[in-house]
Length: 117
Image (cartoon, rainbow, N blue to C red; front, side, top):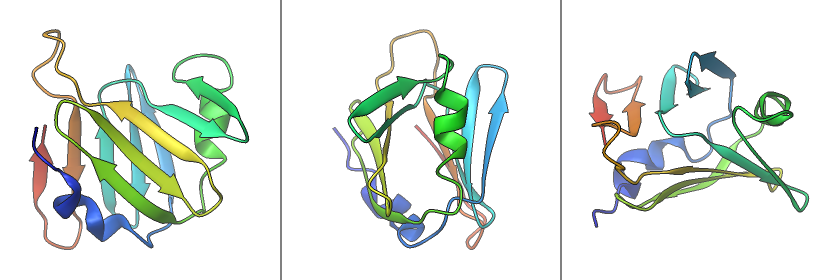
């Protein structure tokens, strides 16, 4: 398993500016940079968890707008974990189940690079 954390550390301290719902995936936007989750993200907050596209998931994701990233961890084949300053955690599976060649895209606005997993 490959540690994806080094490439994503630039998001620590960045606020979530927007959430985009595009057909069957979700994008989390941070001052021009974005994470595109091609597997359904789950929001865990206050002891409750809700997974996109289930009822309440869009509100839970949008409720994180304005909150900064306090930690981010990811292991290829494991799980993306984005911890927000409000205590909420967004997770998304990084397992390749054969239905898709990619599970996560990260575009860094500063460097212009895009990474695919």
